[in-house]
Length: 351
Image (cartoon, rainbow, N blue to C red; front, side, top):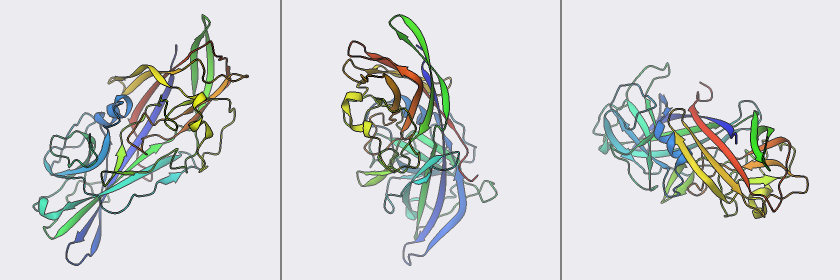
């Protein structure tokens, strides 16, 4: 079998605000930090199926000055970490009309200035934890790291006084698979057949199909989870379909197949296997005997990148994959769907 090859691009950015504890006066800082997503994020997103892990809910700051590299696992010189929520859930920013289409999710966390000891802060990161309420420390693995820079992109520092709060907002942008094409080769009754396909995003304004940051343990989370899901739970599976046309990507309506259990891929023949050489994972989803049996064959797949993620969150939203001709399937056949998903860093929108 030749798996479909799905390349995903993501980016991230930090912005900063200082608030005086006594007066409440707020000051948005010109400093920013365009991040590098790290190997821990890619590995967690693609291959860890443990639903209780992969929470991106804590932020760390430090005084290191070495530029980030993708193999970093921590800050160079840790100062403090926080999972303290500041404000409500931030709605998605959605570009569903103009290429490149994307969705940006965000969360804001607060540092107490008294915990920062007036240290010059020069680096920042997002931690990956097994509990949304966990305050990250120096050894907590990172999903992202960046040096703090001025408006010209030059390294700079932030100093926070004991009578101030530092609010750090992290934005993560995921680019849609907009017109990805390829060939799926499968064995049908002993003969290998090729099926061309195209993948496009759908329902980008639906927070079911493309979830926004959600609350867990009293704090907003993003989630490092994004392999196509196989499940028996309604709303959590990838599905076979007889739909043969692409929907409007800007729709706010969730696709009906998401809740039709007789179309669902219910299990993995092979759980995703991580390959560090190209930041990818390959897995095989199983469509059982009684599912996906359409009179004219399978014409498309609803790709649900939920991967049993922490509730209401995932890296990539839903897409439809339409075939150039139907795949025959009946109640005497199990269909095995091989998928290779890879991830890489991209430029932040507007940069």
